[in-house]
Length: 149
Image (cartoon, rainbow, N blue to C red; front, side):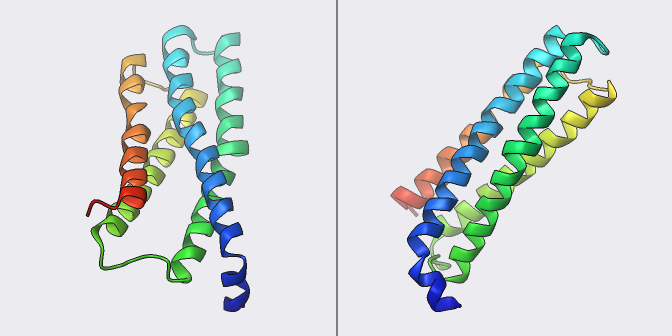
């Protein structure tokens, strides 16, 4: 089985990159939806319902599956030994991916608040949070590609 995984390693890596791109697209877009939802929709309105549908579909159809695929492909690559556990870049990537996963879960919890009509955050707060995935993406890409540490 391990030999087979080494044979298809380029495919696993490609799948990982594609899943990360889809996941990041959602992580960039969902907080932006929350900004407009918080600023423009009143609880129970047609616009509120429209935003709820958009947010749920984005999470369940794009973000959750792509996060799972990114994690699974990443763990397979870890298992194949492509990580340098002695280098700081590896630990920075792992910490950043864990933070990215936390951000995903935080956004999912906010969707439930919007669905329940209990959101208390402002559009400004969601605008600020929108920068978190961007900062994490910079950390991950620089750690993995440039490997300055």
